[in-house]
Length: 510
Image (tube, rainbow, N blue to C red; front, side, top):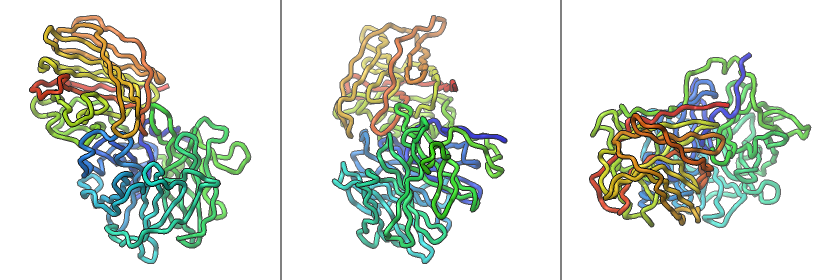
């Protein structure tokens, strides 16, 4: 029999939640300051996924016109109710928001503010059998001073208004600290709250159950690392294919790879879920490395996460996200067909004219374990003071850049060090000249091997030159990200630009 292997997505789709609608599975994930946000994925077999949309095009607050690292869209929840897809989105500094649609491939409604507040996070809607609707959520201590608690509010059926201030239904401070990310279900007469505890890197999955919505709730740890190599296996959602066949999707914090996605078999015993497999005799599930596909999951779909781009469309591919609210002034796909033109942008509103503060930084998640990326670029449009580059973003970031100065084109290695990681943060950058290139058509490559990466560069009819290897680092609540950019060193408005002819991704699986 065929088997699947974990992780099912070796990329940073953090805080995943899933639903099943007829024969289709849908997944959402958090995206923080990277926009468009809340990626929506689709699958037919729970194993192979593809991006189909974003639920949030931009955030309706001026502060997100600049990078707001660690803020933005936190753990979302997706549900389907009476023909509508609902996604609940927390912004930890602004409140709880809702977007909905009847067509997940089409337009999602503008974000509706369900609750203007600071520190409410990880909301999940629930429609009970009697027609009443509720929302469960957690709290962020960094914003409101409250931690370890889960609360339930009543809301109207349309999910446009909360009807009360909510009630604390669980306090995990003693046994399940940092409990958050709750998902609320009902099965066989019990209300179930699936919630992670213990923190992102080393936590565990808890399930609470009660015959009454507001409790009291019994508690049980249902998934932990145990004897496996999968640290912190928690935070996600489950789907039920048949009464005897269920699956749980969760993340694993994998450092610079971000929070990668795993799929676990799940079954029910005495009205408690059992997730994963039993390995050490403690009665708690542990993550599987691989598992047999059942007849339900046998039909393999040729879905994958598209990474490469030839820029032959009139809109950016779904693999791309900006570091802030998107702005059409930053780029063009029509000015020169089959090229991505990035304009040399200043950053006059930013704290400094540095990449960490640059809203016009175009990013893409990395996908493990090993890979290489090659870009073909035309730099004939760069004017004096303009700089273009590719690199790997994180708390220590590097970029291979080309800048036009009064005495010609200089190839420079740009290095950034994020000294303060919250929100706007504090950053130091330095640039080192490593060569001179006068050709207009150039090739840059990034080779990534087990957390180390190296730049290679060459012009037509020249030998490739390589840099040293550098260590990848994660960002604020995210993994390392590939970046493309074009900026102006003098922080002036420029009519210069750089044209990218292609972005070629090649995976090197172990």
